Amino acid sequence: MKLKYSILFVFMSVGCFAFAQDTTFSEKYFKLINTYNSIDEVYRAHPELKPKPTHIVINDDEVVFYDDNGTVINRMPVKHKEDIPKTDTLYEKYHDKYKISRRYINVEGELLVIAKSYGNEPSPYPFRSLTEVYDKTGKLIVNNLLEDTYVKLSPNGKYFATSYEGEVGMGLVHIFDITGKEICTYKNMNESSIRYDINNNLIINSMNDFYVVVKDSLCNDLVKYDYFKNLNINYISFVFYSGVLDQFLISTLNYKIFYIDNNSSKLLWERYFDSVEACIFNKDKNNLIIISRTTNKKNLPKFLKIYVISINSGNIISKIHIGKLISINDNLIIFEKGGKYYEYEI
Image (cartoon, rainbow, N blue to C red; front, side, top):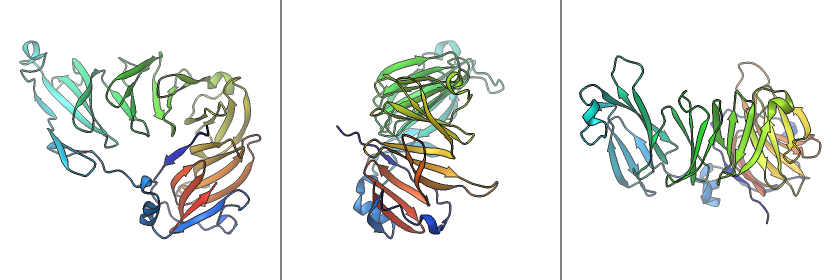
């Protein structure tokens, strides 16, 4: 079965760049399907691309929860500081000594994270901290997570992952479904950063071990790779994985990309390249479609490029400068350039 790749990006416009040599894609690789005069025309033709309304809004005095139609379905008072209430399990022991402090974090309008600390105001170190996660209706779905929790939502909105930025739970990652049911736990000995790719795989980068793990939504390992041992590099910015090819692309901050066979860990090719924001693997046409944000000179605004690159050699086949990337999958690409919106068949 043909694997579909679909992403939605809406970037801030960074200005228009006119280059005579890349006004359109090469007809050898792309077919122009349609042009649009406005983003509203794009949304009428592709309603699935229209941004969904936010479900959670944090105000000064309350958190408001909305349904898909924008109707208020729940409210929660914002309490940055308060006495320990009688309903709290720690009330009897600590209510006369400590207070509760809270921080409210909105995760993409779909999850509410409340970081909760027990302690005294003069002391920078609370005696107990925990994190709670609420769904888009205001229902508590995960509690008693460790302090300094970072929460990341998957692109399809069906999963989320947590990692810890503090010393207590360093290297501990949890993966949940959107109801708060824990799917798995992953632990290493050093600080880990987490990020989802466009296919809802979780990228776990152990920054001090120089090791990256890619897990699918069910927590199965897809990639386990020591990039210091294999590539002699000590930092990566992102990993892009293809389950069809069982190959992956590593992007770094020092303007290099590496293309690797997952089964053998063999480096297939490498090349200097700008910062990669997305990568689509097109097996049928034996190419990669890479979205890159780049600048050639210091202090100049960055702009977007779309590259088509040979899977076999890493050679650039075609490229174009654009203003905004609206959508891309293995069949179509829609982008804005010079105030117009273009839809191409890839």
